Image 1 (spheres, rainbow, N blue to C red):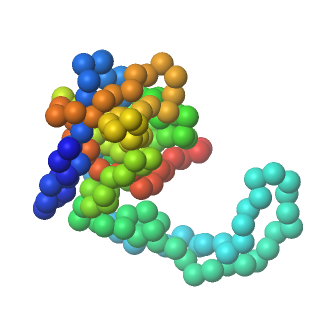
Image 2 (cartoon, one colour):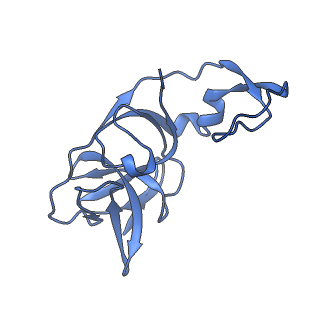
Length: 160
């Protein structure tokens, strides 16, 4: 197993001869321009309503919060449903950090025979696997035909 980074080797994992599920990631051009949004210090219950509080903290720059390494980060649009079990859905935007070292348990973007896919990296019985988080998709053995391209560090979705 080899490791590749933008300036040094990075984890290279290859697939078995199984068919790769149809999931396409599209590069989304972005520019890190500070956009401050008010940030509430209080938690927001997702169960029963709580009294409104006026606990405003300093504004937060969502770009800076989501993108830790701008020179090594990309935003991609997810096309497919193989990761819906962890809340990453078709049409979502993911923030991918190429500077972060991939480890078992992380969600990664990988190149499988030259095609990008989004899966969870697992280590089972001495081998790395790319594992979907939805039924109906095959696990992919990491071999010489697979390269781990980056680690997913954030997900964004518009609700309305």
